[in-house]
Length: 105
Image (cartoon, rainbow, N blue to C red; front, side, top):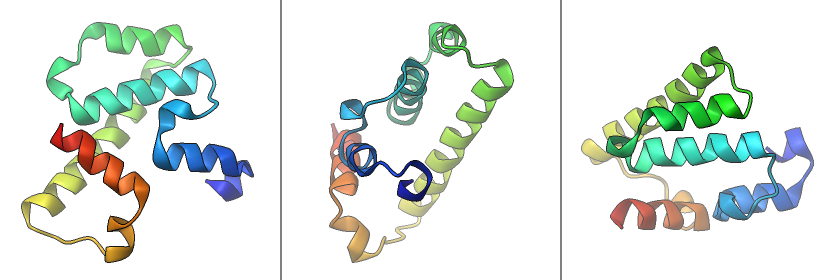
């Protein structure tokens, strides 16, 4: 991300708490959608898709957002379900600790 953006503050915010990052309204809405789909998929409603459309996302883009989010959730659940341990390096990262705390709450 740093190579693409050149913005260390953005990378740091995305790594620890994306809600503190300086983002466009569209990017912020996309991440709201992704977080909800990841952490509370049973709460998804049509308005979640409408909110993305309102920010200018096409139906194809919304499908891409949904599929990428779903794919990562799927892969993580496979690993968790099989007891795959992640490397200690990642367990010590603040982003991982925040992710685990959100899942446990």
